Length: 199
Image 1 (cartoon, rainbow, N blue to C red):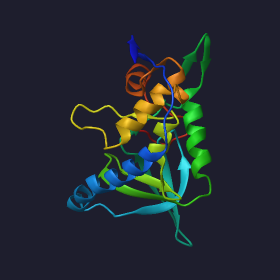
Image 2 (image 1 turned 180 degrees about the horizontal axis):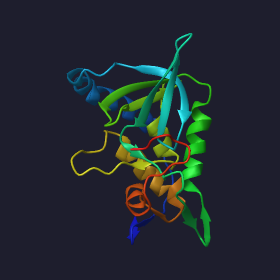
Image 3 (image 1 turned 90 degrees about the horizontal axis):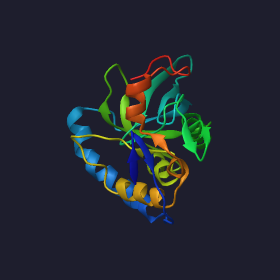
Image 4 (image 1 turned 120 degrees about the horizontal axis):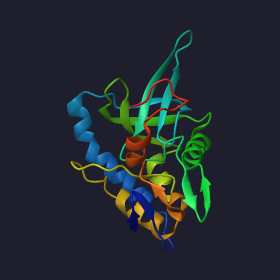
């Protein structure tokens, strides 16, 4: 990986699906105790209303009333909705692509999320699944997501390996030059025209 003034470039090849199962097993084991200690709900289940590549509301239909719980995927990040990447001499909307990817994986499907922490302002960071598939791990493997950068926490077990293989394969975003999402937000703000609020 080469870093050039906040942009990332990567080359390489090949990876297999076995790391998904490892990531799921380790992520569930590593977060179980923390969730119980924080008094978080064990699961939140509903249909996803997508705001960007890693942020959505889970809609629960309770008959006369409909509730929405804000969710942000744990341990991963994606291009912001307005963000672009560059492949060759062409800019492409990596944020819109990541958002569309998440929508395509979750539209009208039941999404099960297991909260890991509370987000200031309401909602949860969570590990989320569709048809028992870890959405974050799948997105990392297809180059839709990058690992969320934290000075205080290590990546979830298995996730770093999945991202490394996506980089080596030049999958998704790793085919292009792009500003890391955290740096892009610092430079351009967090305004998202799809979302009523953004952290």
